[in-house]
Image (cartoon, rainbow, N blue to C red; front, side):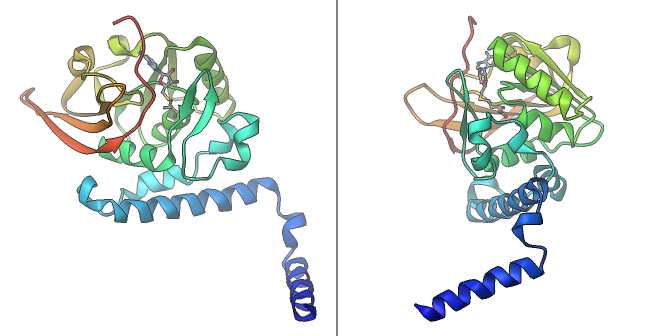
Length: 247
Ligand code: SAH
């Protein structure tokens, strides 16, 4: 008992000597938690490498995940969980995806600094922000107006000037913003929407969860060859909120 008390006093002294948690601002605390999340993602990628066809992600993707302040894009109540590797509620029955899933979807489209990318399902704006750090321009569509408005305001506040947002049904894509080098759909569809295939450039890549509402969805990677031919690869089972809309 006494030894424990002495040890805990020693720990307190050490923390004080280092500057201690009292002087560690919330931002540096968040940055440390974010880095721990990135390390966890890298570990999970190694564990699931047989699904992904790779045992590590592009270092640029991990770097972007280490920079985007996820805690600034989730509701106040969820902030303390922002760097746990799991989905979180963002209101209106929707969720911000698990960071591991955001990382692999981003990696699968192989983003380049010159690329123009479409996201369907803006939600919190987090996936758009990660893409925004990696490509030239992101166009993102959200069907629920209050979520679209909040994400638009948050992304502007955080200085993401290369992300264009739109309120509407992303099933139809955004032809005036395209054609796209990559498309990321973050809601589960029953099929790959043909307008999105049309707006994908030759050589482009699209990731989308496909399946019925009641069965497990599969994350698909659709690649459009230079000759326009499509090649589809099933990546791994996932669970996303459904793609809604009148289509
Ligand atoms: N990418 C988001 C995850 C959002 S969850 C993030 O990083 O936070 C999926 C989102 O897709 C929800 O916000 C939902 O409202 C939206 N959605 C569902 N169907 C849609 C459609 N047809 N068009 C655009 N957005 C849609």
